[in-house]
Length: 370
Figure 1 (cartoon, rainbow, N blue to C red):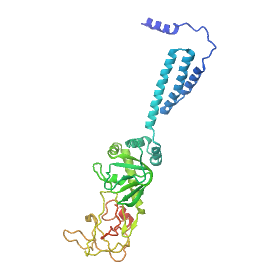
Figure 2 (cartoon, rainbow, N blue to C red):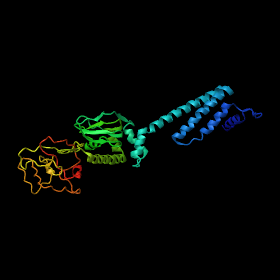
Figure 3 (tube, one colour):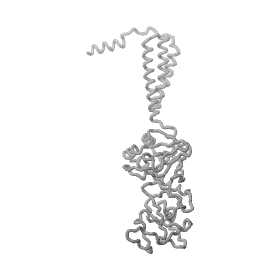
Figure 4 (tube, rainbow, N blue to C red):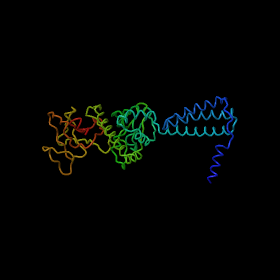
């Protein structure tokens, strides 16, 4: 066995005629150019871009060698081997470009990361998981195109506005705007549990050309259930977005009979009930709004209201009638006082100037925002 191995080794090393002498002739230009490109190619680094650099240089190098083998050496084997190497390098380059395109971010998504997620120190890989949940698709709305219609569009997704401006309205009445880098439907998302269903209570209409991303409800819930960090991130962003929408109501429209409030959460609402004519206490005005005395206050859940000690006890089987306010103006409660009977964010009320009855009587801005 050793004899056979030594024979094979001797055959490889000594089984050919030695060179009689070195020639001074150099190979052609294709051979020299191919080796120069090969030298530059092997100077590439690591990673996907480094591999793309290496194979990008190896491809023209082997092309030069194949041309050298075809025209100068006239060797079919030299040409075929270099041709195979060219095909392998081209396949590698194509695969690397495909991977980079899959891993890369859309220009709008990249701008979103730099503007919103980078200040929060969110890793790029986490952001890619978030955008993968929306299939890395950027959707668009034309001017006056509706994103949701009140009472009709189901709450089955969560969207984030990248550019443009969205108008929020209720029964044709303007409420507020949604600007870039805000959620379109954060109140609706928070108003429902994962197993609940509901419809929009407002209409969302694009005022300009809008671009946004959207997550399907079920797919996003699956992501949040698996990734605790992403769940906390969305919790913070949604909470901040809802707070911004509530504070934007400081620019609300005033009507003669009172204030139109936002009613974005379908599970939390107030009901206006006309006070019967000639009822106890009559109809009085809200001193804060300065409206003409025809308004009283009625809430959804009177049990949550703390009864006034001086108020008359309601009769059996009848809803309690609020005590009329004193004729003199009473000071607003301080901002530190908790509003009685309020359990969540506010909902939208229309202009009730032509209705008999009253609006909710809020003591301060903070009272109805609670």
